[in-house]
Each structure stands twice: as structure tokens, then as C-alpha cells.
Image (cartoon, rainbow, N blue to C red):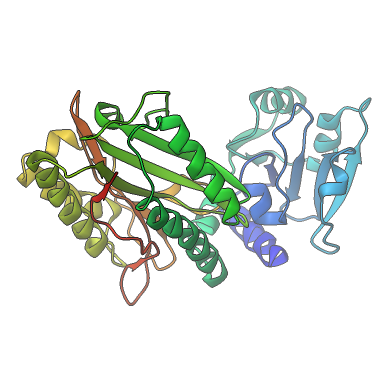
Length: 360
């Protein structure tokens, strides 16, 4: 698998006119090698010459974590007293057009620029982006398995009490459930009660959730390298009419977005389909973010479902559809599922109920 990905990367390098590819922390490295580097002050970097063998320069104390793949890349450990930048520069050789990973720490980018003053640095996304954005069958199944875990959590939370608990306590439960469900890590768990839910990326606090409040739960993690992401809404006790009406419009908006996400349709058209429903319901100004983001080894990646992105959807694109309604000092609502574009139509990976769950 990784050998084939590296070959496709080299072909893309040839098309883009990039002589060498440098991947450090971030998803490009595990995509190409299966190894995820720790975000350390010690440099880890995969060097992929367009016409040479790939080498993974790695701190010696991290080398035992690397699963070697003979014929795909070699592992070159460096010691604490050595200069890893010099190692990388030696493998880059005469390359003058270099693609460097978007997540690479600035200290390493600056050091490489100083060491290679004649080279032109470009984003590695020019190479890896077109490869990673189209998921193969195995990647789709990995996303589906991750989605199944958070679906089960969303279902289980419908039977849990919310009133009298802090946002942080519910957050902690979501994190533990993701880890217990087989995720290697929890990437986020937004829990926002009452007026706090009007802040789309609210950080959970010690605020106590009370009867009569909505609770927004947006959570996801990483399972076997691929991400989950789901948002479900809860209401402590029977919801009032204004919440019910806004949520009904939100459900229709999400359905419109999912239905529009067909192969060949522009990403911005999908955004417009969801946004139109909320605008017609008088809630357009309360929908303050894009309709969705791509997902894969990164929780947020291409393609972005947003106005201005005319990129046509192709089979294998995976993305969220997550319209929202945010009314300051009142409440906020969001409904999110992961969808994979397929020739047969949009494939919604999340299956947890989408109604406004009434909880105690």
C-alpha cells in the first residue's frame, strides 16, 4: 500500500515540477509510510526525491516506533549530538523545487531555507492533496468503522442524564467512551449547554447543565489512522416551540445538503443547498460557518464544502455535512454526519438517530 502511494506521489511530483518532498509531523507522513511522528523539538522527516529512494530521518530514541518497510523507505536514525537538518539537506541533494509538509514546525522550515538558499519551497499539498482527497475502499471502510463507534456513543448518550452535570463532566464521558470504543485518541469533544451552544466551538466549562436547555455534543477522534466526527443535539426536558421549529429547519437543511452531494456537483452548490433552507426559514444569518469539511487522516482537510469552492465532487471524497443555527444568548443547534461521495449517490456513514433527543 505505502509503496504504491509513494509511486503515485512521485508521479504527482513529476507533474507539479517538484524535485523533493519533505514530510514531517502531520498526516502526510503516516499516509506515505504508516508512521506518525510525535510533535517534538527533535526533527523527524521523510525525504522523497523524485528520482531516488525515500529516507526517513528520525531521532534515534524514536526509531523503535518505526515499522520498517524494506523497498519502500529506509530508516536513518540521528543521535542527539548530530544536526538532523544536515542529514535532510544531504538527501535533498541538488533539488531546487521542494514540497514541504503544511504541518512542519516553522523552526525546521526556516533552518532548511537557510541551508538551501537556492531552493524554492512549496506546499507539499500540491503533491499529497490530490492523493489524499480521494479515499480508496479501505480508507472508506476505516472511516465507516470510526463513524460506527461515535454512532454508538451518540445512541448511548440518549439514555444518560444531563441535568445537574457540568459540561466538562459530559465532555469527559464522551472522551472515555471514544477511547473505550477503540479510538486511539479523542480529537475533540464539544459540550455546550444552553446559551453556550450559540458558540460553535465552545470549550466545555464547569457550568452546570439545567432543565430546559439544549446541549450540543460534537465529538470525534482517530481510530486506526482515520477520523470520526459527529454532532447530535439533546434537550433537557421537552423543548419549547422556538427550539423545535429551528431544529426542524436544521434537519431539512442537512438533508438538502446530503442530497446535493452527488458526484460532479460543485462543493459550493452543496453549501448553497443547505444554506437556502435556513435562509427561507428566516435563519440564514444564524448559520455562520461553512456546511462542511473533508475528513480522513485529518479531522479537517479537503474538500471544503463552502461558498467559493467550485471543486466538483468526485467518488471517494469524504466530508461532513453540518449546518448550524446559532442565536446569541439563547441557544445553538448543529447536526453533523460524515458523507462519502459514490457513483450510486451520497453514502452517509453516520446512522445514529438525528432527532432532537429529550433527556433528563
